[in-house]
Image 1 (cartoon, rainbow, N blue to C red):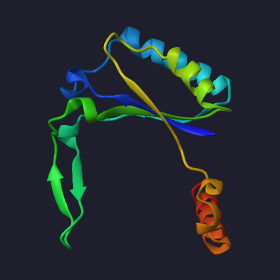
Image 2: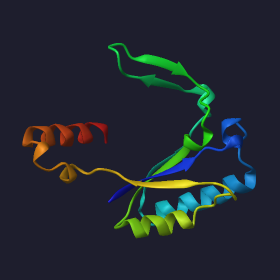
Image 3: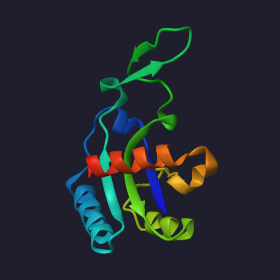
Length: 136
């Protein structure tokens, strides 16, 4: 099972304040543990929403809205993509993350092809597999 671990933004991350050397060191050690355990697929921090944009769909023409965005608690500051056996295992990994007081992390399971059932036709499944091979 793959899980997306979403690190929620806070006032510091939205202000563009960089983490301390101590936190970066702890994060590097944690990421090494994930890699050594063979569970880390990807992981990155994100720039503040002031450097981002949203695209809203509806009414025929997509509208672009430049950041920053007001609701900090709904924004993502970074992520990990991990592959583990269960939600419980994902939770155990997240509990070990070097987060600071007040930080919040959300864990969401990533859809796999088999989750879509009959709606994912053999042709669509082959297309998905071909695209995955091309991006690997």
